[in-house]
Amino acid sequence: MEDKQPIQMDERIHLIDGFDLGVSERTGTYVINEDELTLIETGPSPSVKYIKKGLDDLGFSLEDVAYIIVTHVHLDHAGGVGLLIEDCPNATVIVHPKGARHLVNPKKLAAGARGVYGDSFTELFDPIVPLPEDRLIKKGEGEILTIGNNCTLEFFDTPGHARHHFSVYDPITNGLFTGDTVGIRYKQLIDEGIDFFLPSTSPNHFDPSAMHASIDRIRNMNLDRIYYGHFGMTEDVNQALSQVSEWLDIFVGIGEEAMSEGKGYDVLASRMLEQVRGDLSIKGLRTDHEIYILLNLDMQVCALGMIDYFNKLKQ
Image 1 (cartoon, rainbow, N blue to C red):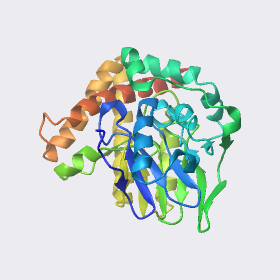
Image 2 (image 1 turned 90 degrees about the horizontal axis):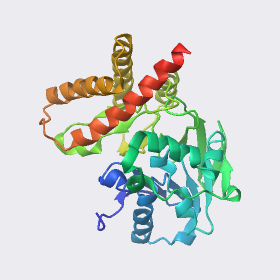
Image 3 (image 1 turned 90 degrees about the vertical axis):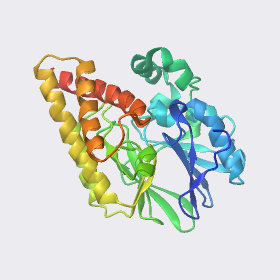
């Protein structure tokens, strides 16, 4: 893992593999080489060492970093920001207005993640370092950030996965950094000839109606690229968005059925995984492929968010 070089998206954008969960091509940090060197996402704190190495591989110093943007404050996207900025003296963090307080005081975020990941929390996420309030700027719907003479990023409110979620538009590539709003791209399957996308319905802000609205909004932007937090970039934008939208309806339908039967998240997760296995089997994927380790975890987390959503509907 230590020797992996940053992945070149084009002449100005690279992707550093953060080896989230100890897995390659799971979560990454984008590096935009403009007048103001900009990072998008940090991943969790264990990924910070890979970000530092990746920047060095690209010929940058930590002093060069001007902005660190996090699409939302979940720990697998922003958990390392407090640790990283300690060594980036000239950097400012950009975050959604609804997420800022959780970076300054991450106790609630940490407690939520402990509830999901249990005994694995320390290995996956520690340390979670609070971000000094004077090191952040809030950016909301329609606001901009100029990072180069010819590059002004724009921020769009894209809830569904989380209420504190924005997506970041890059006009140079007509591309959007979408965090988790339009799901996960399982890049590990590309070598199998499968470009596969699933929605991320994790707790505790999952809202399928808001997610569908965000997907539709992004589709109407007529993008050339989507840059995923998990993982990498696609230029087949319409196909990717259609997959996620279809799977979202499938997952909600499975959730409705399980809830009506009084089943818990474990049954729901199993049914979701079974549906995904069936689809991938039709696509020719062998049943023992290592991607099922990740998919099993993802379906458990997605099921927790689904149960949380349906329970809130009852209130």
